[in-house]
Length: 171
Image 1 (cartoon, rainbow, N blue to C red):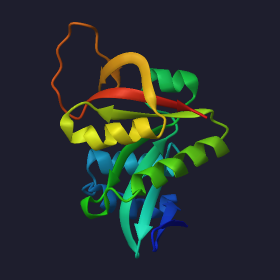
Image 2: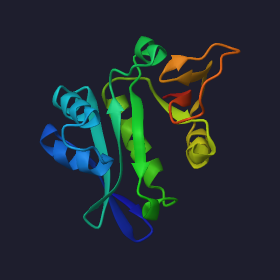
Image 3: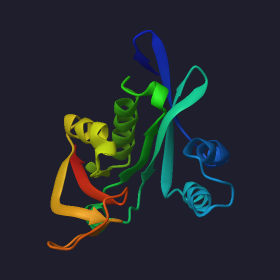
Image 4: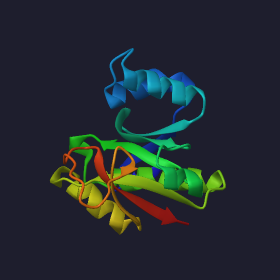
């Protein structure tokens, strides 16, 4: 239990029996590709879903991908925090920081020496960009990616949620 002011925040590590709860929080339609991927990866242990709960309501969450798509993370055996979300009414209250700290703890417990995450490059990710730097995450040094693939110099890509900078933190 994490205390933020006078309110307690519980961080739940979901089990495969909690798949419906995770799908509901992330807004995945039943049977959609995202829903199918979530359920498959939770069932086979590829993803660990962590939820922040306040007053009985899920207010934030992410999944820790133990076998990420990004080649550098795979080569370094780093899990990746993906799809970190905090409900708008619960933002700027330390919930994302608490969630990330819990993910780091799980990575350490699993014998990993660091963790990765990505951040979008458009202004909608400004708060996340600042948060990740404040928490000690740094660019991996390979430039921007699009859908987890490096973008070569001089090549144009659409600025959307798939254009990202990959970040690392070693423990």
